Image (cartoon, rainbow, N blue to C red):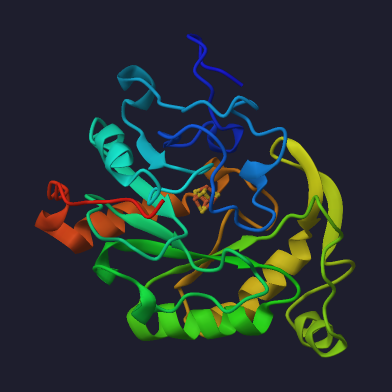
Length: 269
Ligand code: SF4
């Protein structure tokens, strides 16, 4: 999908107030497990060239810096590109928010089968974190509950559940006990179904799996557990969480927003 002048845009964000920017080229070396941006069919093309919207395309938009890469990689370059946009936020799965001049989204579990990163493991100011992203699957509900307690419960940092979509293997299955518990929260049918999500086919979480797990996990921190997309749509225009949480964080960090990055900023890779 392209704008009239050919700049590639993420179809997930069509019709929303967000636009993607990926300053780096090449595959993201962090390689989160089953990252859908690393699979063939990525919207910006297999050449993996940078995606940098011009001023007209980004006008009145919030620019999401890095969906298909990590903002802690080639960090000085990322900061320089981001500085041209009045409103932007960063994505990273490396728990280091130092030197970022705007809100940051931290993915706290690159691999959903390992323990998530905890607030005390983050380098830098927690107030700069717009939300943490937890990659949820049928096999890590317990870890998700721990993450909600640690981030939302203890630090009031929202947790956004991103439901794993699988294309390299079939999804994990729920234990009998978890299935029983989720049925009380509305789960019916298979938790995962094979379908097109945004642009490609995957094993995707069913609407009732999304709604029931959200209901379950939200009890740990009411109002601070959200889902990426809704139970029936993965599109940003139907969700609005990033926009809402971006402005919430800008208000929270106040005059420290846009503090120029230190020249000693260095990437981790
Ligand atoms: S949380 Fe919502 S607005 Fe943000 S990327 Fe996911 S779908 Fe889009």
